[in-house]
Length: 208
Image (cartoon, rainbow, N blue to C red):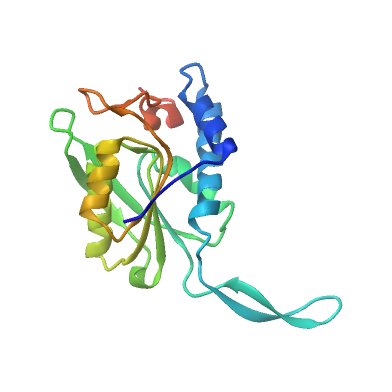
């Protein structure tokens, strides 16, 4: 697996604003969307292209468009939902799948409660999204489920990641390309990323 760490100043700036505990729910939600869009611009730079005939006001010509089946975005519920609209702003025709996982508060192990993917999933470019890559358990489980359904072309986008999560995902799925907005220091005893930004789902949806 190759890992791409984002270096764009706008991404760094917006992640810093996300970290502030005084950032409102509305602001946080907007920042998640904006960072997801900026990251997707990089992550989708290798989409396959083909040419179609286009008639301009001047003449008819061959012009490039995205080839094959449309992109599929798969958020890990629930925090991953916050990243979807940012990517859809770039690719409005993208299909949306959903994977529901919850983390056991004591073991920190992921448990699946929902999985729905567009068909035929094996012909699609899949981008799995989750703002936080902590232990990596949910990310590994989500990719497992997608592969079990036949998905093969898979990328993973995370705004904040811990080294432990990156290691777990890269070891379990070396064929999946990982895009990380910022690599943080470590996990604490409760498996929260440090310095992190708290619980992304709670901050996106205004819950505690």
